[in-house]
Image (cartoon, rainbow, N blue to C red; front, side, top):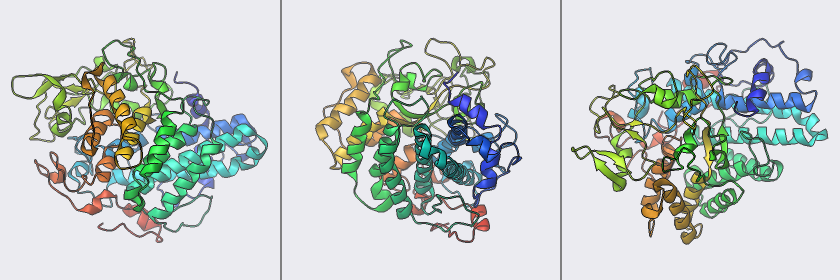
Length: 540
């Protein structure tokens, strides 16, 4: 069982949602409240143990989708429940819109993401807006109701700090994706006013700086719960993108907080527990909470195939990518969905590490072990997006454990992989980029990059003597693909809408530039209809 965050969730899911749904301002959310009499406020917050159970629902808002496991009594209505899960939506909006992923499924609104022609009624964009706003709503209610108990109990005070972090993380994503959203920190029945991106940025920064003191010491908390290093990591990401968000150069701060996270006690995983020549794949296996990867994961969203069942999360990222000649049993699951695969643009990031080809010039084996592609029966080029066998499939993320056994669900229906949100590998990359942009030590940046490449190659054969920003962008893709960071990276490098095209960007085979307003998403039409205080983002 994936530690005790799932014990927390199992208690909380029975009734905490109904309490929060009825006592917090749902603003522009389209939610289906559950019976408000299932749990009373006094029962939930009468002691630290029950407050901890309530905290579980805050974390669960990022992992689960409703009250009955994979389907039934969803937190958000109007969209398939599994699709509404946070990390699945993160994949759709931050990966499927880039060169790293493409899908042939025809669900309404889904083809528009890679084609970059979405509108304000896109159901996946709307679901992400609602999901993040719901997380804010849950957090606000918890913070307010735990406050009195927190004044008397140091442990509950830490719980409140964790809820504040989750709220800040949700607002970071809202700011990144939607720019101008309501800033709501108190329970209220009034429709909120809209804030601008600068105001949201300042709120997130201020909260995180305070949480440096309030959160638990690094690596002192239960696995799956955040500590001070999570605040360092989110500040690192915030400052690295500061020029995009608020037109301020914060690369010195980005380097500073990247280094704080690196030196916090979390370490790059170098344990090749399954003996395949690389310690990289351990990060994405079913036992990544115990196989060494847990020491690199500063914050991961936990999944357990028995106790946190959802058709998003680990189950989505493992099963959706399996199709063609891929055998589901090789990935520890009972079937594949024939969904996302990648474009040649990602494959070409590894072109300097090709050791073999199949006689057609298309690569089939790589010395860089991060190149986890399934090529058998797959074509390098894509002519028909709807055909799974066109485009290489991805082997990254598996429901196998390091010893070769399957995950905890004995049917193979649901997967156990914890999805990393912040890990040390990203902090190495953040520091290196910030340093090259004038914020840190270039020599230390090179050292960090070569540590990543030593793990990737299993030796020093992939080490480099120098790096530049173009190299860093490519290295970020090699290290972080399908982890929900690519859209943000391309925007920061001014290559998301213009200056770089990939297959079927803009809806045409060779790709094309799109309008610059697509660096942020529209405020969903349904949110505008409910809250007349909101104004649509430019271009939509």
